[in-house]
Image (cartoon, rainbow, N blue to C red; front, side, top):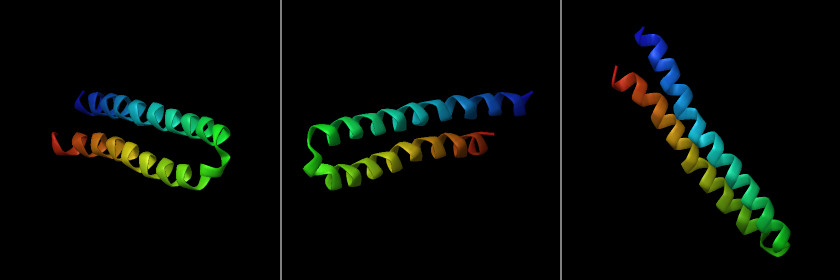
Length: 68
């Protein structure tokens, strides 16, 4: 039973970063459409935000092993 609960927990931990990365991409597209000359800076900031958001998913994955 513990393995099933951990699997569900990781699935829930992956939902947040998935939604966050989708929102980051959407807002980056919107900002680039509004100011195309800032595309390079916006792309750099987008990749940083995606990395930080993805770190949350990895923390959720690792927490399943740590708190076992």
